[in-house]
Image (cartoon, rainbow, N blue to C red; front, side, top):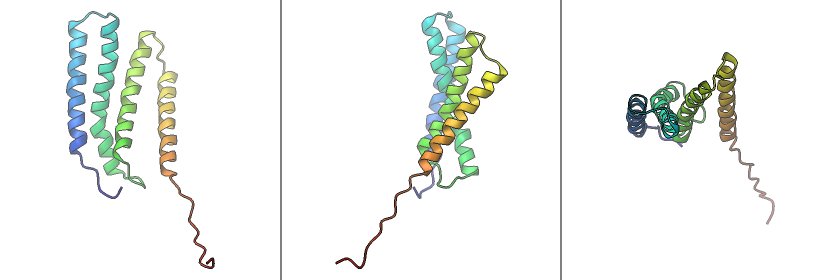
Length: 137
Protein backbone atom coordinates (compact mmCIF):
# COMPACT_ATOMS: atom_id res chain seq x y z
CA UNK A 1 0.00 0.00 0.00
CA UNK A 2 1.70 3.15 -1.21
CA UNK A 3 -0.86 5.79 -0.32
CA UNK A 4 -0.86 7.48 3.07
CA UNK A 5 -3.70 6.77 5.48
CA UNK A 6 -5.96 9.71 6.26
CA UNK A 7 -7.41 10.43 9.69
CA UNK A 8 -10.99 11.13 8.60
CA UNK A 9 -12.29 7.51 8.63
CA UNK A 10 -10.52 6.85 11.93
CA UNK A 11 -11.79 10.09 13.40
CA UNK A 12 -15.43 9.38 12.55
CA UNK A 13 -15.18 5.83 13.91
CA UNK A 14 -13.42 7.02 17.04
CA UNK A 15 -16.01 9.74 17.61
CA UNK A 16 -18.88 7.26 17.29
CA UNK A 17 -17.20 4.76 19.62
CA UNK A 18 -16.39 7.47 22.17
CA UNK A 19 -19.91 8.90 22.23
CA UNK A 20 -21.65 5.53 22.38
CA UNK A 21 -19.10 4.00 24.77
CA UNK A 22 -18.67 6.75 27.33
CA UNK A 23 -22.29 7.92 27.06
CA UNK A 24 -23.54 4.37 27.50
CA UNK A 25 -21.20 3.83 30.44
CA UNK A 26 -22.55 6.95 32.09
CA UNK A 27 -26.09 5.67 31.61
CA UNK A 28 -25.29 2.16 32.87
CA UNK A 29 -23.43 3.41 35.93
CA UNK A 30 -25.95 6.08 36.96
CA UNK A 31 -29.30 4.64 35.87
CA UNK A 32 -29.18 0.85 36.29
CA UNK A 33 -28.75 -1.71 39.03
CA UNK A 34 -25.77 -4.09 38.83
CA UNK A 35 -27.71 -7.02 37.41
CA UNK A 36 -26.49 -9.46 34.76
CA UNK A 37 -27.46 -7.53 31.61
CA UNK A 38 -26.24 -4.19 32.90
CA UNK A 39 -22.89 -5.79 33.78
CA UNK A 40 -22.58 -7.26 30.27
CA UNK A 41 -23.50 -3.85 28.90
CA UNK A 42 -20.87 -2.25 31.10
CA UNK A 43 -18.11 -4.46 29.69
CA UNK A 44 -19.24 -4.05 26.08
CA UNK A 45 -19.51 -0.27 26.45
CA UNK A 46 -16.16 -0.10 28.26
CA UNK A 47 -14.54 -1.96 25.36
CA UNK A 48 -16.11 0.50 22.90
CA UNK A 49 -15.11 3.54 24.97
CA UNK A 50 -11.49 2.48 25.43
CA UNK A 51 -11.13 1.43 21.79
CA UNK A 52 -12.56 4.74 20.57
CA UNK A 53 -10.30 6.68 22.90
CA UNK A 54 -7.20 4.72 21.84
CA UNK A 55 -7.91 4.91 18.09
CA UNK A 56 -6.65 8.49 17.50
CA UNK A 57 -3.66 7.85 19.77
CA UNK A 58 -2.64 4.70 17.90
CA UNK A 59 -3.13 6.48 14.57
CA UNK A 60 -0.93 9.36 15.74
CA UNK A 61 1.79 6.98 16.97
CA UNK A 62 1.82 5.21 13.60
CA UNK A 63 2.11 8.54 11.80
CA UNK A 64 4.83 9.76 14.16
CA UNK A 65 6.86 6.52 14.18
CA UNK A 66 6.27 4.83 10.82
CA UNK A 67 7.22 1.18 10.38
CA UNK A 68 8.48 -0.60 7.31
CA UNK A 69 6.17 -1.65 5.69
CA UNK A 70 3.74 1.06 6.82
CA UNK A 71 0.83 -0.03 8.97
CA UNK A 72 -2.47 -0.52 7.21
CA UNK A 73 -5.87 0.45 8.57
CA UNK A 74 -6.59 -3.01 9.97
CA UNK A 75 -3.38 -2.84 12.06
CA UNK A 76 -4.36 0.50 13.60
CA UNK A 77 -7.86 -0.70 14.41
CA UNK A 78 -6.57 -4.01 15.84
CA UNK A 79 -4.06 -2.26 18.09
CA UNK A 80 -6.71 0.14 19.39
CA UNK A 81 -8.97 -2.86 20.00
CA UNK A 82 -6.22 -4.48 22.08
CA UNK A 83 -6.41 -1.45 24.41
CA UNK A 84 -10.16 -1.94 24.81
CA UNK A 85 -9.80 -5.68 25.40
CA UNK A 86 -7.07 -5.03 27.97
CA UNK A 87 -9.15 -2.50 29.92
CA UNK A 88 -12.35 -4.54 29.82
CA UNK A 89 -10.50 -7.69 30.90
CA UNK A 90 -8.93 -5.90 33.85
CA UNK A 91 -12.34 -4.53 34.86
CA UNK A 92 -13.82 -8.03 34.64
CA UNK A 93 -11.00 -9.52 36.70
CA UNK A 94 -11.47 -6.77 39.28
CA UNK A 95 -14.94 -8.15 40.04
CA UNK A 96 -13.38 -11.26 41.51
CA UNK A 97 -10.57 -9.29 43.16
CA UNK A 98 -8.08 -11.08 40.91
CA UNK A 99 -6.13 -8.03 39.71
CA UNK A 100 -2.59 -7.83 41.02
CA UNK A 101 0.50 -6.17 39.64
CA UNK A 102 1.59 -9.49 38.14
CA UNK A 103 -1.77 -9.97 36.43
CA UNK A 104 -1.65 -6.42 35.02
CA UNK A 105 1.88 -6.87 33.70
CA UNK A 106 1.32 -10.45 32.52
CA UNK A 107 -1.83 -9.58 30.59
CA UNK A 108 -0.14 -6.55 29.03
CA UNK A 109 2.90 -8.64 28.13
CA UNK A 110 0.74 -11.34 26.59
CA UNK A 111 -1.22 -8.90 24.45
CA UNK A 112 1.95 -7.12 23.37
CA UNK A 113 3.53 -10.46 22.46
CA UNK A 114 0.43 -11.48 20.49
CA UNK A 115 0.50 -8.22 18.52
CA UNK A 116 4.26 -8.57 17.98
CA UNK A 117 3.88 -12.04 16.50
CA UNK A 118 0.94 -10.96 14.34
CA UNK A 119 3.02 -8.07 12.98
CA UNK A 120 5.95 -10.42 12.29
CA UNK A 121 3.61 -12.70 10.37
CA UNK A 122 2.27 -9.76 8.35
CA UNK A 123 5.77 -8.54 7.53
CA UNK A 124 6.82 -12.02 6.44
CA UNK A 125 4.74 -11.96 3.28
CA UNK A 126 7.79 -13.11 1.42
CA UNK A 127 7.21 -14.72 -1.90
CA UNK A 128 9.79 -17.16 -3.20
CA UNK A 129 11.74 -15.74 -6.11
CA UNK A 130 10.66 -16.73 -9.58
CA UNK A 131 13.59 -18.06 -11.54
CA UNK A 132 13.35 -17.72 -15.28
CA UNK A 133 15.44 -20.15 -17.23
CA UNK A 134 16.52 -18.27 -20.34
CA UNK A 135 18.38 -21.25 -21.77
CA UNK A 136 15.31 -23.49 -22.03
CA UNK A 137 13.45 -23.41 -25.29
